Length: 82
Image 1: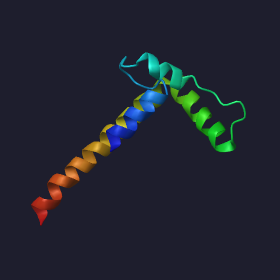
Image 2 (image 1 turned 180 degrees about the horizontal axis):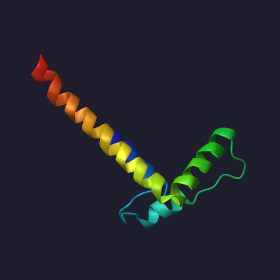
Image 3 (image 1 turned 180 degrees about the vertical axis):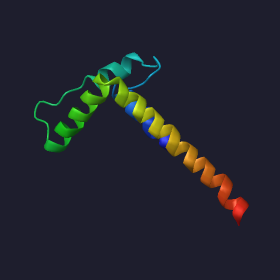
Image 4 (image 1 turned 30 degrees about the vertical axis):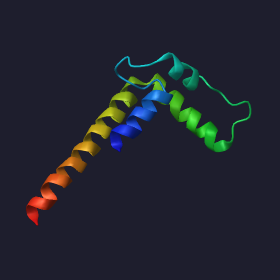
């Protein structure tokens, strides 16, 4: 689930550290609404800041890796303790 969410973020924003974009992703990523709602405006601001700052991209990747490793660790340790 964590990697699936990360891959969706990478698909809809230019956040990925590896060049894995397709032409269809470019059309999705550059889509803009004429009159955005406040929620969409906040999401666009977050997307733009993630696309501009390389340290946020790295932090996001590290957060995803840490979350995934915690889930895997929980799945291994919990049955062993029982």
